[in-house]
Picture (cartoon, rainbow, N blue to C red):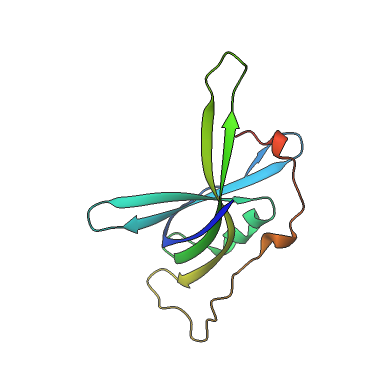
Length: 128
């Protein structure tokens, strides 16, 4: 896995969705970055318990999200086309500015959540 950081304005916050019999949970947050020439929309996935931490984010907040890139290979059967998927899976985030307001004084930049203590999930039961 590769780690990275992305920052931008929170453009969209999806509802938490549950998949499979084991109750795998996923929630997508889309960050908006204006490059001057065009606008990037970057979806980042929060999984399992970290879905609930997104409740503290609001559309319009400036945020920095630390993520891990994950990739998957998928093939329906031996005769079908192989497809590859790339996901940015959030590992932490912090709000750098609430909407139009400036960041709070004394903000130490600590992550608002740390899912390192999350329970393991069965990757074979994930629908993507």
